[in-house]
Length: 204
Length: 204
Image 1 (cartoon, rainbow over the protein chains, first blue to last red):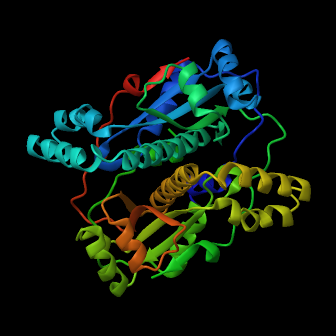
Image 2: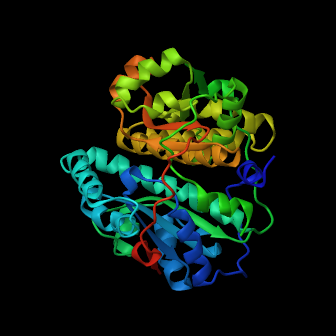
């Protein structure tokens, strides 16, 4: 089995973190750089991350995460947001591909136009896309953390409106998940067993 | 840089597949076994995968994917679904953890009850959870494919209602994404550049 496959096999969702070990801001940036290697529809990159890593910010997050101590114990808790109105931010997201000569101006305009048609009058599809892109990035973030010797834990147990207010999120920022990241402390569960593949896979 | 990190760095979204190379059903099962290592809220595992790998099934999928040839060229195209009413399927999903002695009956009952409270009267949250879990599994599937020397491509360009009808999905199955998987043919784009980290990351 390859190292990468082994990483997927062995990832756990951690609840217990070594409170004595922090992450430097550069390490946090490296994790997010990797997270944004996730794909998104027409390269929308409709995501935003708040890295809650100071004691003061953790204390502000804690009540909105229903007092779950892991958001304070982890070196950092990421508020992983997907963003609405992705057609409006797409030109900025595609600019590096245009600059690199990977796509030409006609493709750029075509994709921006297609995104406008898909999203602008469809708030439900915008929300799906926000959750989808944020989740793809969150999973990549968790694999990146594991690859760097860290553990992570995804959380949906938080109050999105409270988090948005507390951290000054834009109305277009949809907090899709919290992801705690840090060094493991003893006491974490092993990976829980899964349903048999035959339960969830159909061949056609 | 670790092998796993390199894998995240180098993943591409493929459009061109070697049509001469198929995947055995056992290889497809191995990919899905890895995909289901993704986390889900209270281990809901609220996902389902249809592996479209026969010529006949690909021909049925093609019009619902707006004629995009890659769904026929790839060795397999997965219809990755998240499932609604996850509180009703949770007991079955948690049974292996109970059987393994990882959780006790009180925890089992507590999680099932909590899931009922969270989801049963909240269809919007059920939909978010379906998209979220399916996306976490889809990203893990793409990393698993890459780890096994394959390439993959996520697609939202398809008609969910048509796909559901054509492949007999249940009303609770939400097709969140198609993911093509196979061996690469020449002509794929390199990974497209991303927005700078400073554009998408805020420290708190």
